[in-house]
Image (cartoon, rainbow, N blue to C red; front, side, top):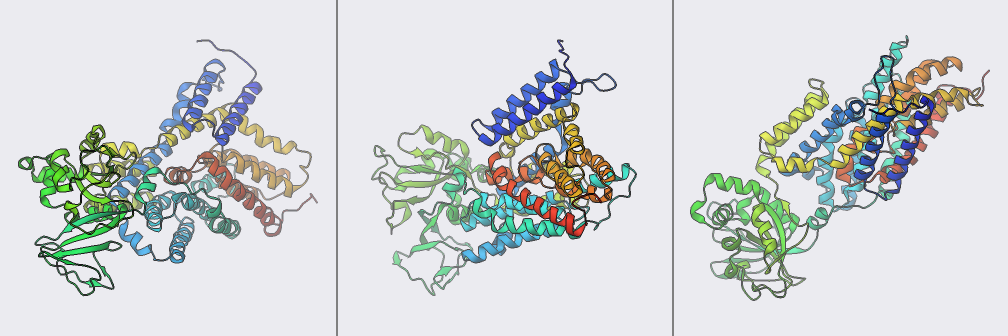
Length: 629
């Protein structure tokens, strides 16, 4: 093994250069995050190999084991497991009752419901671990904004930020606060009490909340994934509901122009014993044998299929899907498996298709391809006829349901075009109670410290898979590789900064500044340096590193060291300008479709606001003088 020995100071400057180049690359976004992380990791591994840093026992602190240990970090594993749990909740649509409760009609009431959730998270995060709170709130907010037709990117980052702001008000609000208290105790001082910094913490949090609630939504990007854009498209499909004996729709009466079991679905025609009934349907009661021609968006048809599969798929159609066209092979077990494997997709009829001028019944998609046509969308024209008798035209878009392999097989068929990105699983609504029970149990055990968050999260992810709420493919797809690589590589950078004494060098250089005789300026400078470092390292690392330095600074400036320790508490919680700054930022990065730059743009102003408020708090509340007496 070749080793090149250079002074430790030069090693530290090299790591500083790595840090600066990495931050610049993240902000510029010229290259994908994954590529930047791989290059950083490779550079650190080579640096540790050829320029080792030894501890007192002669061990290389920059060996591959130390640098790669971040990929086995319990916090990272917990975040990935929590993503799997969140996917299980979404896959079963388990939070639909809660989103209905909060899903007020009208844009003003919808905004009010979002504000209520954010304020509730801010308050509760002061008294319990904010990571489980954000985990619980993410799927609720997702479902809510989808119902509202809003972009998830407008609310996910504010959700994380309000949890962090609430967590800086009490001792148990964040693990960072507890670490500062324990480090303070190790240096010979009394630990912080539960409400010791509650009042100044509320002052800072209140100022931050005003920015997060009323300014951030206007600067957040209106970014949506391709899948969301398709699911939330307002185009309507013509579909058919056959009311058989035993259907829960029998006896349903039209009141105020709508059937209560079919909300937001436009009923075009009701056919009863050969007679056509046209709107309005006020006072009509549905009966067995009725055929309803409806028009609804894809989102509404998906919800209807998830909640009441029998409305859109008869037993015959279920059998055809599960047996790939052979009714004799359909069994109860295969029907259940078909429902689990069923996906929705949109297919278009090209101009040269042989299906043109053929009706849906004549084509028989179920028997030919193992898929069922749920609806047809034809430009802006309203089709008033039996769904199966609609003759296909070039440009028609059909919403189909079927197993993964059946839909994929259609991609090679020249008579239809499977629209890219339109395929999506149907929620397994009947498993929602099971998923919700697992979710609540895991959050409860983590919040009450029966299990640590990593153990609870992994247990919950495994339980979701074992309970059938999602399969292995869906679970692995829920794991965001960007988060995995970003956290692992940045933790490696943190190891390098600590091993080369880079972080300590920055902190101790504070005491050599020319205006060291101004306590207020020194305390404010300590705050902003810790606030910056907490977005590059981790908040816990900053808490442990800067607390002893803050205590020494307090002694030199003739200020109560406890006040300087509280300064570290507030500053280390300013994890707003980086997705790696705090776990909740990582949790919302995927659902909000954020980039590194989004956190910088939205987080830096918030750090500036908290910094300015802290200077006022330090001067007026704690009485820190501008100059030494």
